[in-house]
Each structure stands twice: as C-alpha cells, then as structure tokens.
Length: 86
Image (tube, rainbow, N blue to C red; front, side, top):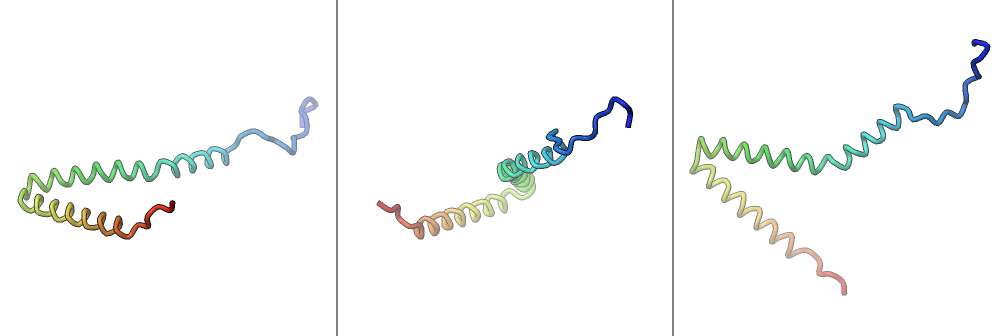
C-alpha cells in the first residue's frame, strides 16, 4: 500500500454487475410476452403468405378451420365465465 492510499472501505455502495443483471432481467421480464406476440404474429403472417402462394385453396380452408375453432373456443370460454358480482 502506498503512503497516500486509504484502506479499502468495507461498505462500498458503487453500482456493480449485479445491478445491471437485475435491471436486464426486469426489462426482459416485462418485454418478453409482447415481443413474443409481435414475433409470432410476424412469423404467422410470413407462413400464411408462403402457403397462400404455394397452395391457395388449402390455405384458405385451413384459415377458415382455424377461425371457426377460435370462435368456438371464444364462445366456450365466454359461456363458462362467471357473471360479475354486484
């Protein structure tokens, strides 16, 4: 130790690597599902375009089946939802 150095402070409050890791994890935790939805929607649109260009009739029939199944699932869930308490 040089003559002008102070002994290390035991309570050092400088931000370190752990703060960056925690903030990064919080940001990814908040943004994961919205980013997954955006990427999934883009991938679904890209797949639909490729399928529509290759097999138009099968793509339209498949899209209709998915739409009918989605509407049926929506109705099924809505019918089983509890009415709001007054």
